Image (tube, rainbow, N blue to C red; front, side, top):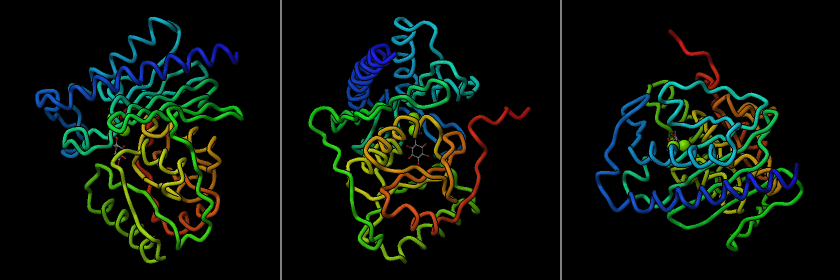
Length: 282
Ligand SMILES: O=P(O)(O)O[C@H]1[C@H](O)[C@@H](O)[C@H](O)[C@@H](O)[C@@H]1O
Ligand SMILES: [Mg+2]
Ligand SMILES: [Mg+2]
């Protein structure tokens, strides 16, 4: 199985790189950044998101015809978001669409691969930085092209930088919760709060030791599937925002180094968005 998995992962890396090239080219063409909206007026999608997801799925289908997919834009188009035991590619074609639309320079292609409902490997290609982050759920972990994972050993949360995002839900109650968590964390006080505008890159920043923790409520499984392995294989931990094991379908995540995770969880004003795998409402 090892060689088989490596073969699949090699394909994921190759197709992520190909997808990244499409994203870079699209950035120079305003038409390809024309905005459409999904769950809210600030939940953006472009024809490039759809095109890149199609490219990845078609490429994988040719090589691995029995594999299944959970893709952000396919789910937006009505496909079910159900993780089975079958080999499944979990794809975010452009993580950081808002960044892409505004040319804010952090945009990633994120691909997680799951078997038996466990993510086996993750590939995050931060395509404007041209950084490829990969990790496989075995002891080995690697970040190609010399992007070494330098995991943070800081355990004093007051010396930390915490990454988070504001998401795309602007309901008053949600915004209140987001700011309540942010206020608690700033008041610790931490050295700083940052956000790259992409969950996948934020998780790679944890794995690289650039930030001590990342948390968000409102993410989707395609935002965090790949990053989850990258963080864990770098030596980090994943947790639910109220403590306890993370559930990638729950839309809640904390990814952190060991020293700060407990402190961060204490400060988050948690809430529960509709799960990714909830049955569709009629
Ligand atoms: O750009 P996306 O693929 O839509 O992912 C975004 C997500 O929509 C947003 O809610 C999060 O705050 C970002 O961190 C994601 O990466
Ligand atoms: Mg995303
Ligand atoms: Mg996306």
